[in-house]
Length: 372
Ligand code: NCD
Image (cartoon, rainbow, N blue to C red):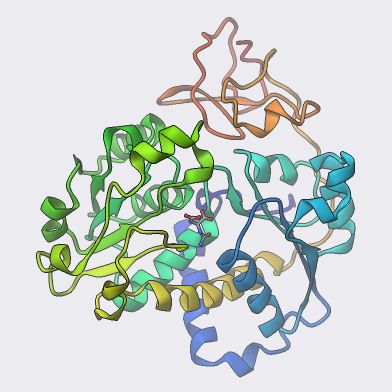
């Protein structure tokens, strides 16, 4: 059996997702039962990018399950600063640890790491691409505060272009029936085309709005996000978007009584501090729900897993991904992998659409050549 990795929540069936969320609830209600469930297990956290919540909630999760933790939160304190490749770091760390949790500024890194890891890899955020464990946190928060994951109108506000938490959340919520989306952003920060294509393909109703004030009354859930300063090409570009949306008590007057306000945090200036005391704000509770969700995920990933290095796919194309932020642009040994999707030809690591046309046959998903 191949090693299971969590690059994206699509790696889990809906049934598995439900089982993880059910387990999170049991753990939350009976933490002492799980105190020793990871005794003797070691988790590594490789954080190439800053983190407070994701890293600490993973640490809390494994420690509360009786396991232990190794890793770095600053690659300059590791051999990465001497020029070690992602491949070598992951290959070595997965010899020690039973689980490898990785965060990296480049898109597609978790997928790349999974090709060289002997233990399951969990994506803790790869550039502006995906952040599946934040989504697990968000789902568990919605279950506990709204009571369901379906038939919701979800407003997503802020940096929908670069916000990886938004991408993973949308991709997952379209798997549940009856969800609608209100995409609140400036035109420059709107949801990437490949994400909109997914919404259309799933038959999901969505509208776009440039006004939080006008949209807030429509939604059951408001998912606020930070403008992702570190993903902008220049400081000037960021300055043009900074402060585009700020949720304050005045705007909140127009919201529904049962609204729930989520935010993956950190907050910069997009939610006024006065909102924190409104019962509709659940973003601090969300952090605790995230820890229980990660405890359940760790148990799920470790269940039956054994160390093995799976055969690597061979390159199925002749050139590199066009996305300058893709991991394949810096780690040149990675096999070049492309897949055909409804949106055209996409990189298998970062999902970026490629402009190159197909020259020869093959599906791209079964390792046959797509030659672009
Ligand atoms: C998010 C992230 O890192 O993508 N934070 C988190 O993991 N809780 C959101 C953000 O940084 O804006």
